[in-house]
Image (cartoon, rainbow, N blue to C red; front, side):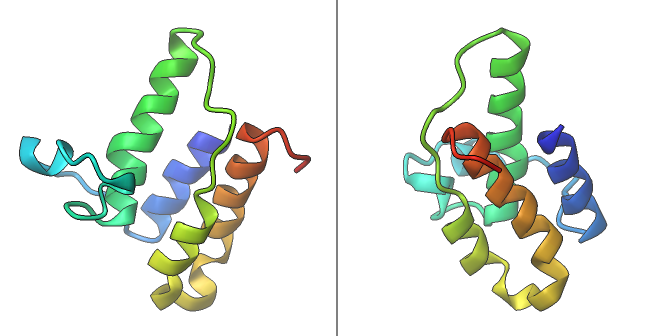
Length: 101
């Protein structure tokens, strides 16, 4: 499952956090909470949690997403170390948007 791969790769790159952002940081209304969270925090505490909950509750998943451009910008400082992470995020984009992966 791609969410598990995303989780594992964030841990591998030491981007997974133990401390949950505070309520103010989580209350952002901007895309990706870019004003209060790093992108990896948004992936962990918003995206993975919401998608997991939707799957658990058998709810329809988003049908048009585009996380890869934000991921490429956010993780460019990692260079080639980010390749697997970016590949997973690209696969999620394709899967949830109905494009072939």
